[in-house]
Structure formats: structure tokens, C-alpha cells
Length: 66
Image (cartoon, rainbow, N blue to C red; front, top):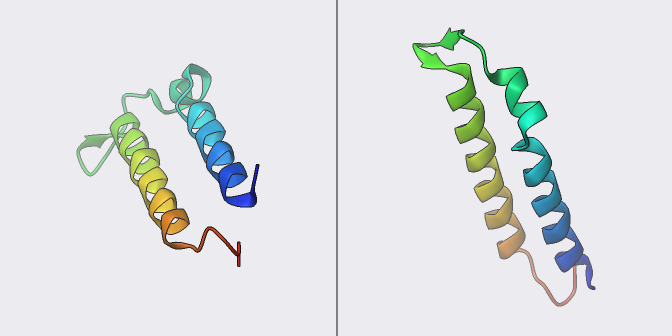
């Protein structure tokens, strides 16, 4: 497996960990931030960060792994 594939596998594993029940239970509180529940902010933040990292990895050259 090349380095780019290893990074994608690492991103997938990190996403599974961040979206697992024990971590989600930390953010499952009645508190709000700006009127939005903290759990929703966490879920959409992790989702948006994952998309951003995928975009960044997709723009890097795959052949040279520079």
C-alpha cells in the first residue's frame, strides 16, 4: 500500500473512532452553543473536517507523495 492509501485508511479509522458511541456520549449533553445542541455541532464539525481532509488529500499528487 502506498502512502496515500495509508493516509486514507488512517482517516477512515479516525472517523470510525470519532463517530463511535463512547465519544458521542461525551457530547450528548443538554447544553447548547448559540442555541444549537453541542452534539449536533460535534457531528457536523467532524463531518466537515473529514470532507476537508479528503479534499486536501485528493489535491495532493498521488504518484510522488511529495
